[in-house]
Image 1: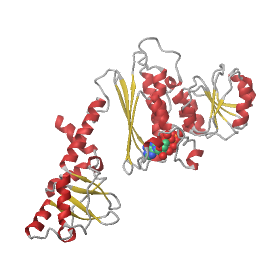
Image 2: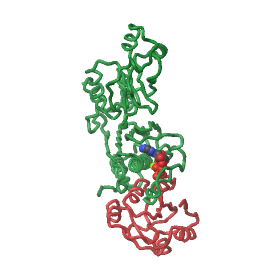
Image 3: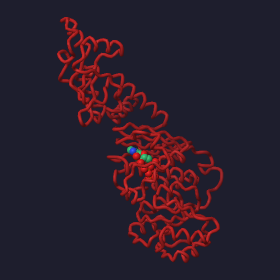
Image 4: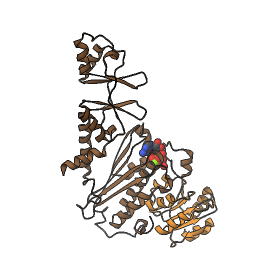
Length: 319
Length: 115
Ligand SMILES: Nc1ncnc2c1ncn2[C@@H]1O[C@H](COP(=O)(O)OP(=O)(O)OP(=O)(O)O)[C@@H](O)[C@H]1O
Ligand SMILES: [Mg+2]
């Protein structure tokens, strides 16, 4: 059971999520002696060699250093001693694929290239383990059930809904939001929580439609105490998060604005609506929002009979 | 001001009818995020948007009515969606600014007009 859970975890991760990005590199014209010093100083056992535009041209490993030392050639340039046909993996590959390459080759590290062949990181058994622990922690913090489970049966009023959002499908904006709100209304949650969740999910959904390359997913999980919403996409990511969080800052095009989006209010409003807000983004890779809404007794609609039915309650038909 | 009075004031056509009620607040905006960011409760939306997302916006924030300005032709899809969600929908020939002015003049609390 535990084992399959970890397997499931590995399957969900992409290589870029498990790579180390602050890669120490060297150039072909460096001396082997300098690389040796670098490796000792940084406690690393392999250094990718890149050219002036960042393309990978080789790798120097401990074995290469030893070979050069053996022959008394440690003062020679990297070019003559580096390994030139480097085994690499791609940033968007499933992590499982990169792990099997590590396994097959027996190498301790693999350079990671992006779509254009640029070196963007390096995966090692340690970086993979680290990413698994981070992901595991996140899931534990979220109290999530097994990912296969469609509905959280542990809580009588539990709810788990997952939405796929398509990039560029402007007319679909709000679909996930109203579906989720209807479920919350059915469970008798207070209007205030319904509204805050619906607004936050609407804005997150709109961002997936407007700003991403391939859309993304929204996952909402409710138990007795909280509603947790995770929003995830795989690119293009946000370069400056502080700027993106600014009231009124938007990169939306004029066309998108005529369709009603791009006031630059979405992210700040999501933060305002949620009781806990976390945004993480890596340019070139994607963005993730973790939102939490606390269900106080009043929010659960426990304390008093519900007020007049809002629109959410009537959302019986249609979508 | 009663909803029916506002409709008369705006010379509006009702596409999806609803019950009459007292209008206390209006959110006027073409950008949906403006509407989603409003703090108002039980308000009427004035917008130039004629798409399903505008109806879903109303649903998300719990708005009471949606009025489309500038006499736009409203796609059947939007009308159907409003019907299925029980969101009353109307259209006025007035521009956003004019609609806000006429509505505001009749209401003791002036409308918010961010657009
Ligand atoms: N998932 C995302 N991927 C990439 N960039 C994003 C993403 N979400 C937001 N951004 C960037 O952050 C900016 C601010 O986002 P925010 O949601 O606050 O405003 P907006 O989407 O531009 O306009 P509005 O939400 O008011 O319609 C966006 O213009 C965009 O540049
Ligand atoms: Mg947005």
